[in-house]
Image 1 (tube, rainbow, N blue to C red):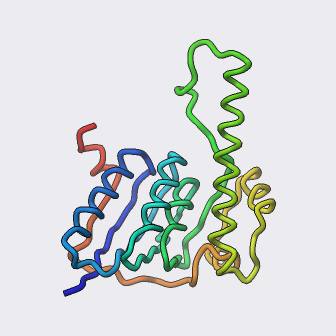
Image 2: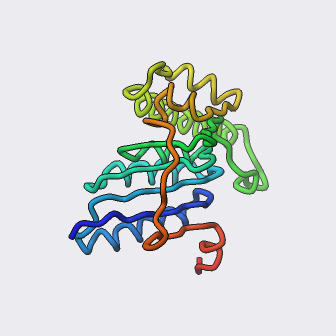
Length: 198
């Protein structure tokens, strides 16, 4: 008998979060009874590489996929969200885009001009890939499509798209209030992840 697997995710996008979620999906999908994955997402963003990995992973899933933005989906979370086949937002939902950032902790103690130039090119490449993906995934659903250049400008000034604007620009199919089941929901939160090794 085919079933729907519900996932409530309130977590920062990280490599650990990505590994735990993809591992869980692969584990339950291997039983062969899952017809659809339904995600209820709240995230302040996180690592862009992990956001892209989650996008690609869910885009490639053979099951139906549905995502709900329950409050805010920011930064790398936007990439993750756009990997789902059906996309919805609650009336209070929003999406935030900004330029790619990285932690100062990633910088070496000694930093040359060529190191700086390489970091600049890496950040630019991530931004370009992100902006193209957002444009490609939102345009087919949009009443008012955003060009790559418009997304680039929005990211440069940090822009929040609230529910109605998100629908107009194709981030979501509609503004709805979902009804989440009371059982058989997989919960993935920052607190849960903090208790896991690694």
